[in-house]
Length: 81
Image (cartoon, rainbow, N blue to C red; front, side):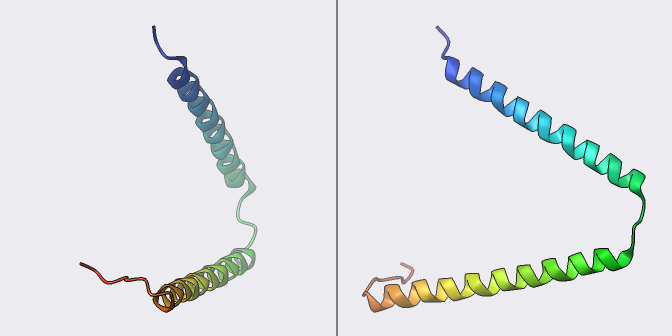
């Protein structure tokens, strides 16, 4: 007898990805019809996303340094073999 769990999960995955692809294609098609609204808006969005990415990288670096410092303080050995 075949197990029903993989069948259900694969069907769900196909349904979710199919729906996502449909809406992605629809959104891109509508954006193409809309035309170019302005480079100022696009540059503002790119500038803001660059700032968010930079802040994320800095916070990731600070968190990793904090984690390594705390582990050294607790006496954990983090050296490579």
